Amino acid sequence: MNKTPSFRVSLLPIFKCMKHIRNFCIIAHIDHGKSTLADRLLQVTGTVSQRDLKEQTLDDMDLERERGITIKSHAIQMNYNLNGEDYVLNLIDTPGHVDFSYEVSRSIAACEGALLLVDASQGIEAQTISNLYLAMEHDLQIIPVLNKMDLPSAMPEEVKDEMVDLLGCDREEIIGASGKTGEGVDELLSAIIDRIPSPTGDPKAPLQALVFDSVFNPFRGIIAYFRIMNGTLRAEDSVKFFHTGKQYSADEIGVLRMKPEKRKELSAGDVGYIISGIKQAKEIKVGDTLTHKEAPCETAIEGFENVKPMVFAGIYPVETDDYEELRDAMEKLQLNDASLTFEPESSAALGFGFRCGFLGMLHMEIIQERLEREFDMTVITTVPNVSYYAYSTAGEKSVVNNPSDLPDPANLEKVEEPFINAQIISKSEFVGAIMNLCIEKRGVLKNQVYLTADRVELTFEMPLAEIVFDFYDRLKSISRGYASFDYHPIGYQASNLIKLDIMLNGDPVDALSALIHKDNAFTLGKKICLKLKELIPRQQFEIAIQAAIGSKIVARESVKALRKDVTAKCYGGDISRKRKLLEKQKKGKKRMRQIGSVEVPQQAFLAVLKLD
Image 1 (cartoon, one colour):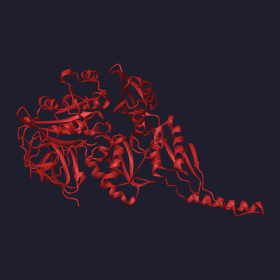
Image 2 (cartoon, helix red, strand yellow; image 1 turned 90 degrees about the vertical axis):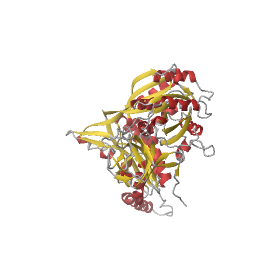
Image 3 (spheres, rainbow, N blue to C red; image 1 turned 180 degrees about the horizontal axis):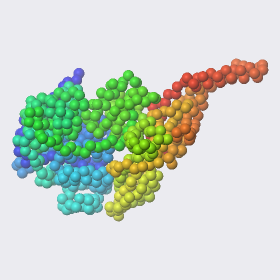
Image 4 (cartoon, one colour; image 1 turned 135 degrees about the horizontal axis):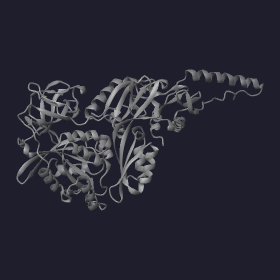
């Protein structure tokens, strides 16, 4: 039987003095040992007992443990004594993959300092640079840390040179550490206290707190995590959210330790949680400002950047009756992951579902997996695409999220697609292969910089649509896993794009339609037709699979009909008897084809994504 989660009241000292608080995050590229180092910090500060310690302590999703990646940022409070003084350290852990950069921007907005973690055996990677710039924009104090110093393949001197070039810091400022052995962790904790500034804010000013995360608890409703910039919040206070205007009572407030711990009050500089009986997901917005109902603050806090979704795909329930359940599941997921956007849509082939926006392909994969695991929802995902702008001959501009929204080609002036600036860092021996891949994906080389004699940074300008499918997988293959990839949007540019329709027996399957560059239309159409021929099961009638641009068919394959040998029992006699039976069968097949429907299996939708 499920029990309501227990919330302990802590006997630890409550720190009123802001100069004893440090708020910091850890930023790093994926797989640079961030979660392992966080485990050591929790262990050394005594936040988690030896008995409760496990690998990736802060990663509480099964998916995170299986894949060895951080998907959500997690906040935790630690206590540490240095030179006889007690300090409170609020760590907000961040993901490392480019698809979860939104989580990083949320954490950075709530902190004064950041640990920049670099793997001593791999050196600086693209996402490290991207997250560093994000931290610098928010004026965070950066502490450079060289992790995995215990590895035999570590190259501390070379990587320190790279870090000095990137940050412009002194070599002595770089702390050597190992999340595995615990080397350098005490030095790191001292550096956090000495170098990162304490929070600034006025505890007597009107309450102003930044909501940086929220989770759904089936027993207590929605729990919001916040960082107080100014003012003081007490239990039972009447509060309101600045943007939504919704008002609540602070039933319970507290700090985030291994288990949430109640507090009577929290003031400027503190990171904590609030439970106020919020039931509806849409009533709370991550990035909103929490303030008092009676004496509200004058302005909202400038939140973290609002990241626009990059990749769009339709998510549909397998059973149409599950539509409302899927909506509830999506709303609860959106609480945990504010970068997920969705709106209702319907498809002729798949019924009612949602048009969802994701930050990238991994993000899309994770959302689909979480829907299946956490909410027991089996869903069909359509071919992902990006958002386009279509201009009509009358000068009207419309947003095209779905190929079926594209206006009639006769009235179409031009189509603009989103372009990105792609940064790829790799070993110099793979430069040729990487250039070939990017040029094949319509990329234009903008810059080439040798970071060291062996490591090169390539900057390409390329369409986002070209990296949506298999770009990242192919990049990893040709570079034997050594290339790191990061991108940011640079706006829209006009391109020669056309709509490719896939038709089964003359009926277009809108879930398989795609907007693609004219030069690739024939090749892609042929590949999709061949793939569908393998995957669509044979019927009693012949199925024509066609790829069309407008009214012009560019590729065709046929799935042959299953045929019964009607002449088997007809032996002897005139040939006309056999002809009569075959003609009768032919008429039956023709009628069957007119009324028969073709079911496209789920793996056919997924296989289109994995075309080489």
